[in-house]
Image (cartoon, rainbow, N blue to C red; front, side, top):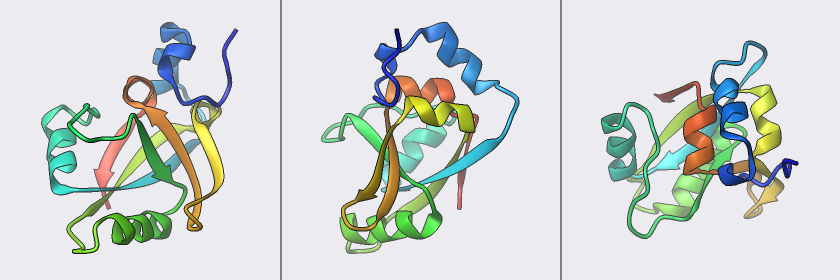
Length: 126
């Protein structure tokens, strides 16, 4: 039995997750503020997320570009950040952990790297 909304890939069947990356249906865009090193890591690994020192276990994604910018300004006061957009199927959202109001900024979804790398259909700089 899957635990819906945990954001932890190990809680779900890997074959089920693999199907989500190719699922035909409505797509959703989520946004994340990243430092240069995280952005380079994503590009260097074929748009896959990788672990790195001092990173949180879960990766948080804002539901809109403006929220991601606000988090970027909060975590990178020197403004040394970029915003990336991921595309996932709407169905994949039920596997991610959701908070309606994170850090008094706005709504966001979170997932670990294992889950992300199975559900993300695309990554681009915005």
